[in-house]
Length: 421
Image (cartoon, rainbow, N blue to C red; front, side, top):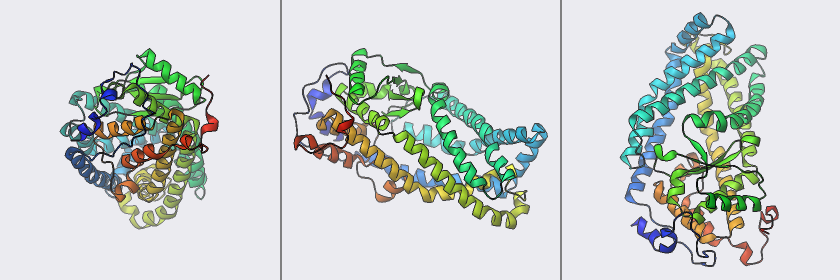
């Protein structure tokens, strides 16, 4: 059994989060990559099917709204309600978000609620799920209404260069989103609090100081209300940057495992991965918009009677932007995910060099595999089009063998660490 493969480390497994651990770094025995459970294999295969369906729906819905002429009718309603151009664009954004969200609701319900309960990954009530879904739709509608005018104003002012200017505008918009989301959006869905375990928090802050992070903020969030899976992430920018730990992770991992997770997230901070992501978003957005610019004109000329508009600058063309942009994004996704996997691998390296606790790192990955029903060695198609992280099997093997400090080799990020004294 998969669980038994972890139980062999009974001392670590039985510790409570706040208790000190014996020295695991002295134990250099390799940790074997466990085989996935049958439930994890089923979850993996059904997830692949779901990804295919979700990708298809993501293209089918805008195509349906576009070729049926429904988008042009939404635009007409928005113009009657909004009167002025800017207000009409905002009203259209709200109407489009609500309609498309309702059309996608059955799939969202299955993926986010029914499937999670079928595999024992959630005990969230249907009422709470619907409430969270409604909040998500509202936030999306407001967000789109605030920014949709930008590309359409640029289309009016500069029909030949709008794609470039919009791509450049995505840089400050993505930055603003990262600043605002942790403070104004995330708390709408879950409760964020300082860490309750002050002893563990002290160890985290000591580790952050060694990593060269001053004034770091660590929060725990009550994700147990929604899921049984475990996770942690880094978010925000400048004054809103923070490391967030799910309460499920705090409950299920040992103190040393939590510290390794924290060291990994600190790596994202120190290595400026967020800034790299913002730049990548701008580049990918510009490339997608250029493809839309080159292709949209021919489609409008051919199907304008079905679309209900003659110019790309008409806000009714928004589903066309989504359709073409989605097709281009599908092509660019492998490059974006390759960047993400590289960043995650380097964050693992940073954490290993900071903690020098290889065994705990490997055991942490095993615990993630168990709790999240992960397959440690997914197929190539999954890796290319779905894999935002390196396979857990590869991460366990890397944790086992990466020990430059033992052979007096130079550590890649050792110069970034401060003395523990």
